[in-house]
Image (cartoon, rainbow, N blue to C red; front, side):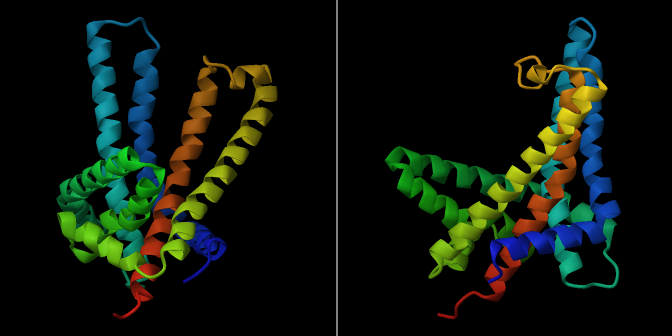
Length: 240
């Protein structure tokens, strides 16, 4: 299997090549966020509260759908198809959404069960079943079958898999955090905002906006990374 750095490099490269496509879709998350910001500015009333609730719901639904759609697009790009059928993948993502959510809920229940037992079982369950949602998307596995397939993919290479599952997102998340604060520090001079306010409980609106934009356009990297990892785990799965 490729190392963590190599997987991240591949993720960045694929995102760079298809930035307009992938970023164009995740940008839809900014619409309900903009509505949330807009509706939260005036004084609260029943009507605005309802709009805020609808905006939050829309953001959640779009986020869940993108969590299925973007990996499907990446998977097609990796298969080197001459043309990605976006409309077909959009419909497929809607069709898989409930199955993916169900598997995610089962994962969460198992993980929480592991926490009740102690930290070590929870960690083991997390690594075993972390690929279950991708099994639903790419291999048409359902429910417990997806969890069993995820467990099968890491069999015999638990620590190698655990390192890639944990280290990649942590390393990239650290890069995003450092990059975000550097940008915020630079903008604090432009807006003449004390740096201490960036770390306060009531941050200026522009800080929330900038942070959300950076986080939104960083999301495809995480999705690409795990799609690459899943395909490598499947391709290098030891034969029993």
